[in-house]
Length: 318
Image (cartoon, rainbow, N blue to C red; front, side):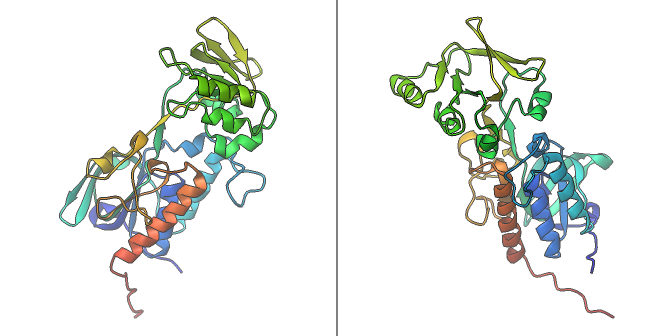
């Protein structure tokens, strides 16, 4: 049984999904299976595509590369006659009961009118001078999520860069997986650890490198070399830079949605923001940045959207 495609260029869609990472794609799949009309626009920056192999996403006992998981989700969505429009939504506004989104990109862009919106635009990582950034991430020398893959680096030499807030937490967490953990200061001008924090490091057996980190290069064997201001270099097996992040939430906050630290959007139990009809899922929301979390939030949001709109009765067969 098939459901008809919805060319969104000339009509109002039930839902516009902004972002085609795991959250956005899952939301779109659910909505199409509810027989809802959907447009999905994505600029191609999903962090999932950076992950060499994820070993903690359910159903893949041998792990799954992030790019492959994205490709499978896109292929699944195509089964419901819906593809991803490549482009960027540059403006989102309310006009009466509808949202109007302006986007550029494939086909010249234009405006999309929608009754509801799911924002799945993710988050942008902060900066740290790492040589060959993508190569380092692809090889596993640089890793972005201790919760995702701490188990995969058991007994490795691990370097963690201090966070802006709760500066020792990630190093203490990684001590679960290795006895060889070092905490590096993020940048010049950052205050040194206080006495309580230093005692935490000593109690856990974590080395604290107080000289500010200036940059990271890769050895011939793709091992991270961390270079500090005092001229020292430290070779490790794995680096967790703890870059910091800023959610891509401007489209929502511009309409009045509430946000918290790192510009993360605040949502209720149904993934609704403070703006009626505007939902948010995945890393753009306050909470745990995980593929499975984004997918679960997408299922919740899509179901809430379906229940909030008039039911799309099927026409009688003639």
